[in-house]
Picture: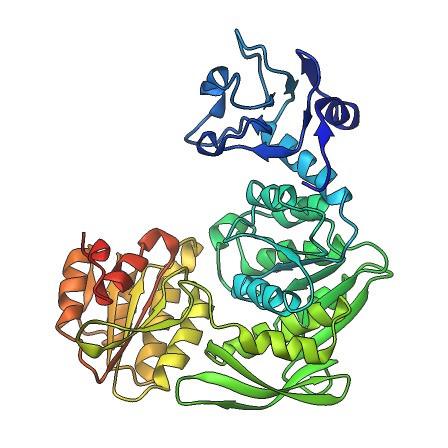
Length: 459
């Protein structure tokens, strides 16, 4: 934290009740495995847990508590509130208000973590950024990033995720970004929103939450660019990126090398700056454009942006290429999946020489059209000339059937990882590239690990 806070400050600003007096604290934690004697402990409540069950045992291990009900036989200072998750965000807001540097926020259906890491690479050349750790991008994770702000940080980079209609607006009310971007809108988490239009509306809250003088980075190639332009708050600047020269920042002369990494001219204010990415996939050109625009809006030069983008070598679980069993090339893209990101992975794999195999775990949270979306992925994999499609899960059967053009003969669909891995090991040789992808629930990282010779994946 930049500066210490007190329970009295929290109670005065946000209400609630003080029990056993106030206390000054400089750390916040919500995990009983990460306690600190200098910390305030927030007792969160979830679907399958309630930290209030343990707070009575924390006397002497933390400075004070945030709770939503009385804790018997506990002498620790407490801030008693109606909702401890809301209180977590309120503490985060006070930490954010102590910070005076630029704040950048990114959301989107695909690639937001990659954009965040691109920005971190850019700013780390000349600044000390505070960046969302991992995928801690929701109502629990974003406050943790704000708590980690310190006096050494001079820029704040926030990734914002959403599972419901008002999530982004809530996160913006805490993080208060000055530069915001929606990377793209694709069918992802449709169940939580009801439709892709509803996803676009929800993601667009990152723009409508901007104050006067803020900057909105718009992906002009996204289907919802016009929608966002028409709803931009008065006094908010816009900076458009894309593949067309009408954009303020655009990509020109895109060429993929033999591995699938893109080189292109990054054009900023009419000047072309050659850039070679070390990230697989042409889709990362758009990610780089969004990151470049965010950094440019925050005051960085084109030279800094190009240098930073050229240094990033990848993000775990996102198109990480390694040598696997029998000399096969394994591309681990197992972190998550939706139809858009799977399509990008198929395009990358199709450009490889030799035998090309896609291994796909079920794509989750796609709503009533989930089976049709899986069929479309299977069709695309066949049309782009992949040699084989192996799938895991009941929805994957639709993708496999489409890949086989409706024939159920030799359908490579599995309900469990072990037989899938066994079948895949017979396909591997030094002329094979195999790409592994799937939603988090499919745990496809275990398949990738097994193909790399890691025994954890074979359990």
